[in-house]
Structure formats: C-alpha cells, structure tokens
Image: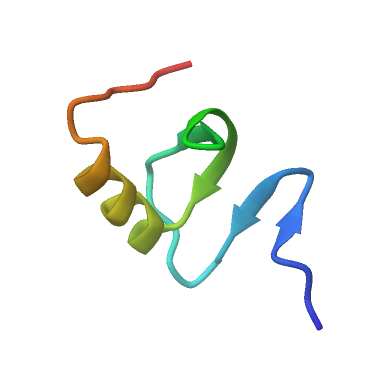
Length: 52
C-alpha cells in the first residue's frame, strides 16, 4: 500500500494544481496539492486566502 502522506504532503501527480492550501485540523499547516482537494477546500473556506 502506498502511503499518501510523505513529509505531511499529499501529492497526486495526475491531479496537480498550481494551488497550495495549508491546513492543520481545519487550520493552517500541512499542504494539499491536489486539484480536487483544492476545489473541495475552496468551497468550504472560500473566504480564506492563504499565501506563504
């Protein structure tokens, strides 16, 4: 079984977007680099913009 989390980063090379959203239990920390996840998270947190 592949481990989807490596160094706290979830990476799906088939669904990569140019966006990174950081989360820690719904807050900031850890990165999700996945187009579907970004769309889902943006729907839930669309009033929040996070930039490093």
